[in-house]
Length: 266
Image (cartoon, rainbow, N blue to C red):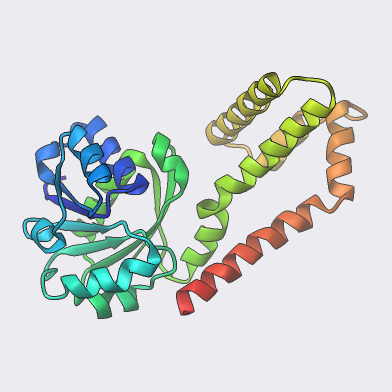
């Protein structure tokens, strides 16, 4: 990609994107981070990237501006930047803040929403994207070029779909962590040490995820392939099914989606 980047907010997501870009050979001289925290600033400067506490100054030479602040700060930050974002694309990772709100507050006509997840921190993220219709294809390509450095990107044609993205991939890592946490407890109850149990569970999760990611067959088929009739896996899966596992997971995802919709409308 060709443009200069500014990150408003230098927290985990901004650092993940910057780290991914640096790994791909993107020049640190073309990135600036604006953040009021000296601690965050020191971290950014150790990466070789310029740090500033002045948002207006930081966006002056930017082509793409990443809004990486908490949702509660988005309006204040955007309103302070109003008038300085002409012809600059604003990419927001603030959950629940709509493009309509972002355009109204920032006066930018080029707005993209991004719903990342925490595995972006290890370059294995899933990032759902929605662009205001005014954002042309070349700018969308620039956005993808940046964000692909930390994971897989997927465009959505309806902004409302980002609520489902939030429920499935945005919050999804916590669901897997919850399952892993519970499996560790089960192993401990069986007499295995916590350290060994954690290794068993995390390596199994990693291997299963790799198989599902690399195999064209569906997770359902992969599950069936390792479930021998009358075997241990069948005993476990039947117990999960009888306990309402499927319905409970679907209900949990729907609850997350409803909460995301509530945040978007507030």
